[in-house]
Amino acid sequence: MTLLRHLVLIAVTFALSSFAAHAQTSRATFPSDFDRYVRYGIYDRGSSKEEAFALPDTIAIAKSGKALPVGTRLVLGIWTNSELTGYFVMEKGVDWGLEVADDKKTGDWHFQQFDINGQVSRGAIAERCESCHQGQASNDFMFTLDQMRAYIP
Ligand code: HEC
Image (cartoon, rainbow, N blue to C red; front, side, top):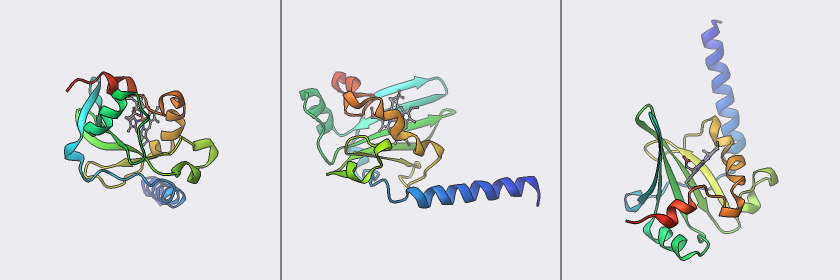
């Protein structure tokens, strides 16, 4: 077997096993009404860029100082080499935290990675969403709460 074929096999095996192990752990879905979402934050890092989106209602609730309710979805558009490559979504559900292992708990938020068509497309980073956002526990596990509150349409 050539080295390349070997590497491809390893990659496929890894992708399948990680999919099987985690397929049930995220209930977050891509919003069907994404066209109603508002871009409230841009994180421009040259050829890579991230854009944060939420519904106008979500932004209004954040501005009022209240906690974001169950049913809230937040979307982050991921740009690599000046191209939109996918979306990260976090969604809050009733008691969803109970389904998450202790070391991955982020309140009742679930995290998921999607391609540009809104289909689940998990890469290695999907295993790290929670660990990064756990550091933001005091901001409801969000990094962009201040930007959302400061957003002026
Ligand atoms: C290395 C740390 C890190 C990892 C891993 C990470 N994030 Fe984030 N996330 C951030 C930061 C920092 C921001 C703020 C935007 C920025 O600076 O680009 C953010 C913002 C977000 C937002 C906008 C709402 C908010 O929390 O402020 C969503 C949605 C999001 N991330 C989802 C995800 C998902 C889904 C994954 C896994 C596929 C993930 N993130 C992995 C650091 C991380």
